Amino acid sequence: MPATAPITQDVLTIPRKEPEGPVNLIGLTRPQLRDVLIAAGTPEKQANMRVGQIWQWIYQKGVRDFDAMTNLAKTYRAELAANFVIEIPEIVTRQLSDDGTRKYLVRIAGGHEVETVYIPEEGRGTLCISSQVGCTLTCSFCHTGTQRLVRNLTSAEIVGQIMLARDDLGEWPEPGRAPKDETRLLSNIVLMGMGEPLYNFENVRDAMKIAMDGEGISLSRRRITLSTSGVVPEIARTAEEIGCLLAVSFHATTDEIRDRLVPINKKWNIATLLDALREYPRLSNSERITFEYVMLKDVNDSDEDARRLVKLIAGIPAKINLIPFNEWPGAPYQRSDWKRIKGFADIIYKAGYASPIRTPRGEDIMAACGQLKSASERALRRNRAEAG
Ligand code: SAH
Ligand code: SF4
Image (cartoon, rainbow, N blue to C red):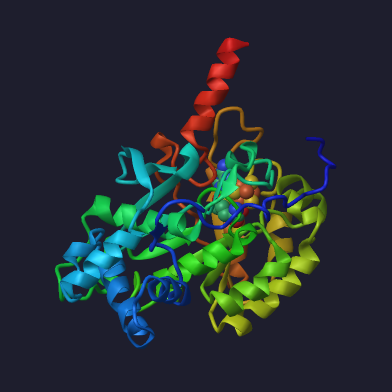
């Protein structure tokens, strides 16, 4: 695609749910679940209570078999089993890094694959989940950006990534013991895997509502961070309809450089993006926005860039997350030197901002930020290269 091609969003016609077969209860919102239960014969008066009960079995206890839902009558369980399924995507392979990071290759309907990464840290465990197979955007430093978009994930496939990680971690509590955020292996979620979450807004929203619901996965909204490349029209909506923390892939301090790194900047430039971000904390009643900044040698890493950055974001409650560039085969950039990253961080710190440098995790298994790209796609390219 030529560099000047317009950015298009051509995925709106893709159906949100798989049309055939019995209805999968995973990923349905409360009202959707209520509706399908009523349609299958649940008396309207009981429907809300049944939604709560079924959600607790599914999302808090990890139950996939209706017969195990012992607070429901046997006949009702049989009716549910006749009408519905409880299905999450399948783990194809799991790779374990030397640093404990786990990368899952996950198969979804249609034989597509996405990656999900679990990162254990002191006092918390973060799951990095994908929202699309590939990405329509073409950020020049991102491996996912070299893979064309195949499709949006459904809400079942998004929330299912949390569930399959819990399966693998063996983290479904004993009946009756409510999980506490602080002691959970999987305590935080970042929407920083493959895809642009705000180009799959409804499914991401529905899945995150289940993640945040007290009868669902039950994580605090402050433990969920959505990262966007800057889809400006959806930012206020994210505050109002999801209310989680926001991270933005900022990466440059002039439109000229940001156009090159994050091409969506040609549509919504830095000034427009900053206007939307200024409104976010008030609209979502949340604290700071995380500005992600990938450190690319001699591209965006000068002292002048650091000074421009703090000027640009003045007045926005912010934290700046410096990400040393993670290389991938054929990448057109190099990681900034450590000394340079420290120098950049110092300027930001002195201006009064927290500026943590993100430690690359799981590099040995290509699980670090921006390295994800489905293995099937890699294999396809390899085969093509070999054939050619
Ligand atoms: N599409 C969303 C979320 C996924 S990317 C977004 O762009 O925000 C998650 C983060 O990793 C983003 O900040 C992205 O810019 C960054 N990233 C992408 N490729 C990278 C790479 N090779 N090295 C370091 N960070 C990268
Ligand atoms: Fe897509 Fe985000 Fe990668 Fe850009 S950085 S290509 S928006 S996944």
